[in-house]
Length: 220
Image: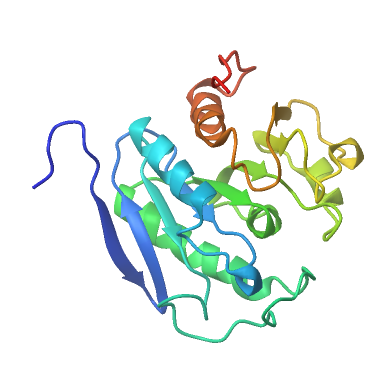
């Protein structure tokens, strides 16, 4: 039984992919891309789980998923275990688009927000060139492992979030288009062990109005 104020996340299988779905009534629905599968990244990663929880509390439908070859998702990952290199994302991009199709059909909407964390930021960026993606959120883009130059050509509403102390992300190297918003989470690193709640609030607030954010920082 689901009590008032609780949120039920339902397990779904989309083709060969294992996913978790939160229903909601507020646009846009959100698909969340996980970190690097070769480093243990999955839809159960703390950042991904927190985003799903925060967005659902904000009223948005969400779907997080495991890439092919990860968890209960069938198939084989192209990325060798323990490898840091980010390349050849076509499988993960196709996985995100498949999840997006299912989410849009479920919610009866025409475009979703793609949200990607770390490795998932690269996947979301590549997937966002498609018309099924109406907004893009890029979290902790690992610029030292992948070329994020394509961010400068994004013509959709765009939010980029970086941790203040992130050895994988050189936010000064990012070239963002006019209208994009860059937010920095204080006292945090690439894994957001601190600032995790603030991260979820930041994304949810931006989806609410797409404008500058005015959030109280979490007490440390």
